[in-house]
Length: 230
Image 1 (spheres, rainbow, N blue to C red):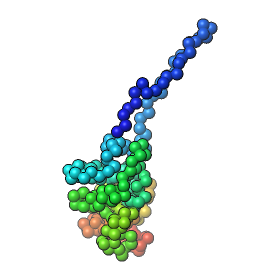
Image 2 (image 1 turned 45 degrees about the vertical axis):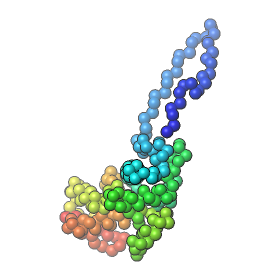
Image 3 (image 1 turned 180 degrees about the horizontal axis):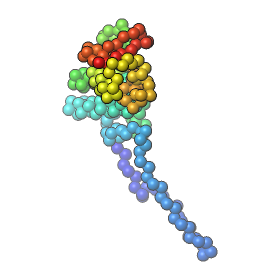
Image 4 (image 1 turned 90 degrees about the horizontal axis):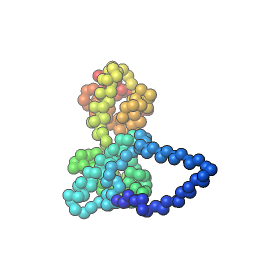
């Protein structure tokens, strides 16, 4: 962590005294401190700690570090309404790279973090995405090994999204109403909902859970699906 500079580190320009014929200037007010913008994501304290960007070998420390990275990734994606990331692209973003420290999580360590998030120990808060609908689990693991794979970030898992959708329908009195998928994720009516802008594949998975629970029915052809909640 960088130390806070003291006043002794800065030189102060000499102040000229006013002449007898000149009125003394009134002191200019000090600028008021600006609070953080509500549009800026606030990183946790450990983000300013250089060792945070290198996974530690001691197991207890590593587990704590992996947990902190998982919470950070979930919080960052939730704030920015991101539902999936491509690891190779995300490495250069502020999420994994602290420009002020000139530190960045390596590709290897970032892959280890995501893989841990995919595990039961990491509460399955991520999942590697196969490159095509016909891809197998092995293919998803190959993407993980290559390091550039795309992965879901489950700041809400699919079953949690299903519950959120059911709650929204109940709260807004839309049971029995046929809704398009566009109305759910992209209409003005849902701009304040956390599922606004949700990826279509994740929405489909969440709705499938609603269907299995007997809470919804999805019908129509691909690209023009509708859903009715009960």
